[in-house]
Length: 67
Image (cartoon, rainbow, N blue to C red; front, side, top):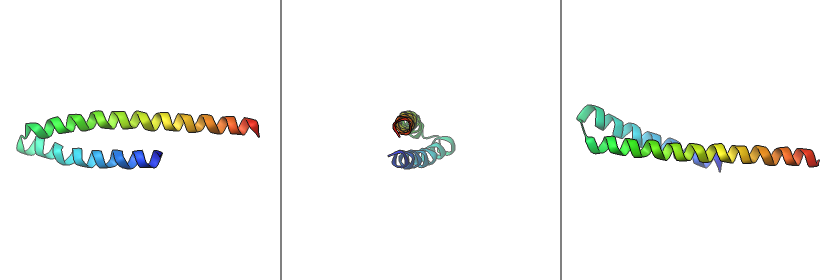
């Protein structure tokens, strides 16, 4: 699950990079909006990764204590 989220983040970031170039080089305002939306999506995905890692670490600690 964590790797899947990271792959999703990389795909969003690549698309954002393309839109950023359109915004900066061509003055495409809509591309700037898409970059902003992509940044919000990345923020959400990053939080999901953080939560998943914390949950996994917690489960491992419980398992370690039970063994």
